[in-house]
Image 1 (spheres, rainbow, N blue to C red):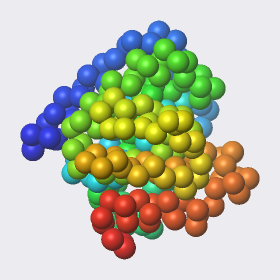
Image 2 (tube, one colour):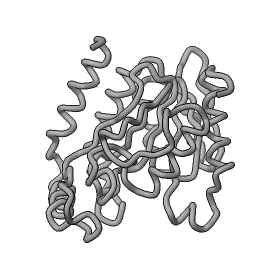
Image 3 (cartoon, one colour):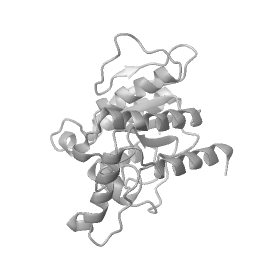
Image 4 (tube, rainbow, N blue to C red):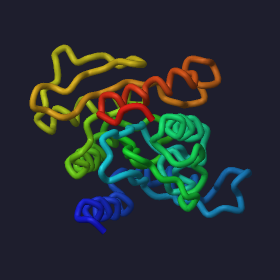
Length: 236
């Protein structure tokens, strides 16, 4: 194991053991105990979710938080839910994943040039973390970015992730314009001179966006193809 991979594994162990937010701990564990009827025979993860992917990735994909019956069930970010179906299918089409599906931690999925994580590591009630919960998780994102030294592009899935990425960029000493750039699908914030992080906005692949046509396959593919370009990966 490389030094970087070992450091990420140590951070992952710290994340999984975290119990800093009583409301989130109660919710994630209650969901894991009660389960959804369709998954009644499965053992839920019921703990915080770590990042996942290529330790040398130039592209970081940042989401909001794990889904109660997705990542909170399977133990891997964007795995076992409709959002993950959309996300990894697009990453596969764009040459960033070895397969289009993500259903379980041991399903053989590998990411190529990409790392996926979330701004909040526990499933929140109604998918809405409180400000204090967001703040408790922020140091984990910051430390991931410090360890993932090759990241050049952060693909922000939704406005919550965009705000977290802006905050992380500022905390890493990279300038953020004033007023702060607004989130939008396809929005870009280039890296400043002698800085490394560009931000790229994408509508979140939630069902409320994909079922309504607000986010289409060509739209999400366009974001990942642009991320490849910005990261210097070229065409898939």
